[in-house]
Amino acid sequence: MSIGDEMYKWATDLFPYNRSITGKGVRQTLTYIKSILPNLRTKSIPTGEKVFDWTIPEEWNVESAYIITPEGKKIANFEDHNLHLVGYSESVNTVLTLDELQNHLYSISNLPEAIPYVTSYYKKQWGFCLQDKIRKKLSKGEYKAVINSSHTQGYLNYGEILIKGRDKKEILISTYVCHPSMGNNEISGICVTTALASWLNSVNNLRYSYRILFIPETIGSIAYISKHEKEMKENIVAGFVVTCVGDNLAYSFLPSREGDTLADKVSRHVLAHQVGEFISYSFLERGSDERQYCCPLIDLPVVSVMRSKYGTYPEYHTSLDDLSFISAEGMSGSYKVLKRCIESLEANHIYKKLVKCEPQLGRRGLYPNISQASNKRAEANMMNFIAYCDGEKSLLEIAEIIKAPIWELIPISEILIKENIIEKC
Image 1 (cartoon, rainbow, N blue to C red):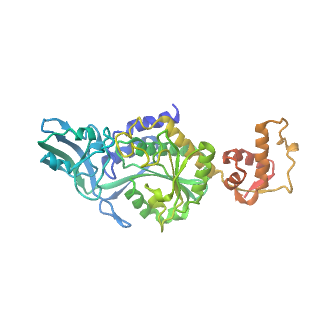
Image 2: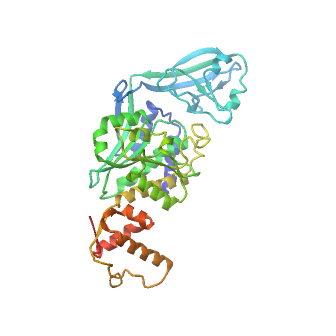
Image 3: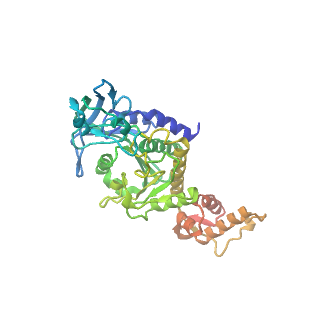
């Protein structure tokens, strides 16, 4: 099974869970991920704990929710789709007129087939989401609204994997586990991050250490940073928020707040050489956990490499962002780009030339004997690479200068080290 097909299978399994910022759905999701990644450690933070300017909310769980029409028909049934219920709705069992009910209904007039995703995490209220085509057909009369939910002293749960490399410096990979049944946002992020973690678990002799997080968005990243601020600020040299990585429509990049960190540079380089065309956004268009990682006083070097960015496609935050909107191919493409970013960071050493003037490549068997375009390109890459091995520039910096993909320079550097032409600083 290809990595894309494997990720799509995970997506299919995870799709039905009712994830929110707390509750059973998050724990179900983390348990599923742990079945793939045994080194995932699950953690809990209790309701009421202060995390910077925020407080961990009550845990929310749902047993059932629906509306009964005057005709006795059950609509907006939570069992049919978990987006039917406004997130964090309180329990209710009441009879209302249609006019009264309308104050608790949400739909999208220009997407009549879609169920919108609506939440009210920090203000207790209740509501239902439904297709606008159904809402427009509701008749006058009495409606019964039933929600069996609970707000209790519980926990915010998250998952963490720490992989030790030769260096204490870290790469951060972060995704979120708080969205219910939607594909690109955010089943895809969970699946691609799981695949990356699985690959990293299999790599021997990693240069960097890795901090991989499965957290609720916003409150989860705030809570995590509040507990690990010191070591994150000391050790993280690059980070990636993995979100909206499942569709086939585009590749997108959202930079860090400063826009010139190592994570920014490697992401732009890989996207330019591996994908070609991609949409580049401003940090002013942020909307995910980069808001927390990159904010002043934290200032971590974190970016987002995405397919279609959140908020830019009509299906976003609706039931139309389903398993048909994402694909094995879409997630596989994202996985390969992020994997290439990590491989490039692992190989991004500084090299120093050991031979004065140009080395004689011919006597070492490094000069091509046949004149072909591919040989000429390889020869040019080798000579240009050597020309910039001054003990100051990194491999990524040299790749940018000579306009070559960094991964084409990695085997060249290995050959030149073997031939004592350069050394790793």
